Length: 74
Image 1: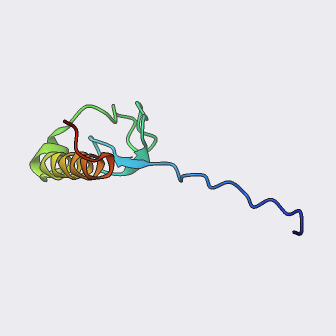
Image 2: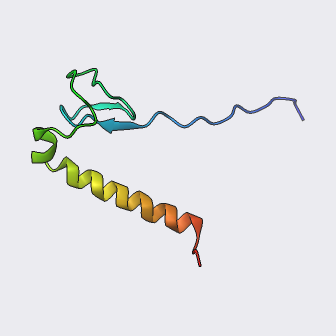
């Protein structure tokens, strides 16, 4: 043994789309640093370009993956 302790892994920050200007922001951001709008409130561009649908699909995929890793619940 060399006595060297390996560094602990740290997950990278999660990025999401600003629902106003469609630029990436850190998850949990309220005021977008790009457009100054409410990053959580769906704007016209977000709705019109189909990002709402893509986000819904991602949420469903994550839920399915979590279900697979947690195993069956009886």
